Every structure is written in structure tokens, then in C-alpha cells.
Length: 67
Image (cartoon, rainbow, N blue to C red; front, top):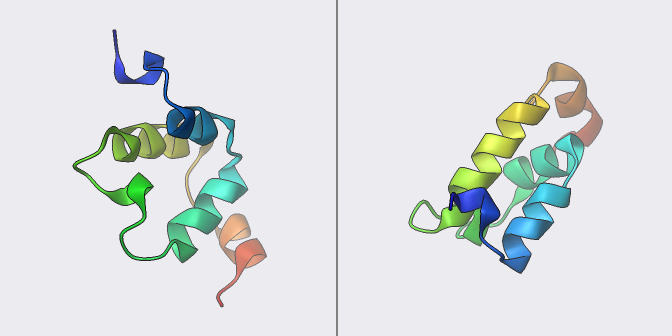
């Protein structure tokens, strides 16, 4: 069984996120967000899916801006 097949509500949320949602979370997530904790499986799942969707593009970066 690979990590993407584990039944976990957080992994399901990651798999449902759009590229722009992921980019926004990547940029604006608070310190310590569980998706970016490399000791948890979420980081690998998030990173893989984010890259598959195309990651941060100049267009998305401009669309989400800075706070």
C-alpha cells in the first residue's frame, strides 16, 4: 500500500484541492501547519500533488498576491 492509498480525511482534503488552493496554502499557511510538517505523511502527499498540478506559476502568484 502506498501513502496515497491510506484512508485519512486530511489526505482526502489534499487530493481534492485545486492548484490555486494549494498555492495559496503554500504561501499563506501559518507556521507549523500539519501539511508542511515533514515528520507527517501529509507533506509528501501535498508536495507530490502540488507538483503534478504545476506548482506555483507566475499567473497564480499574481492571482493570490500577498497579504
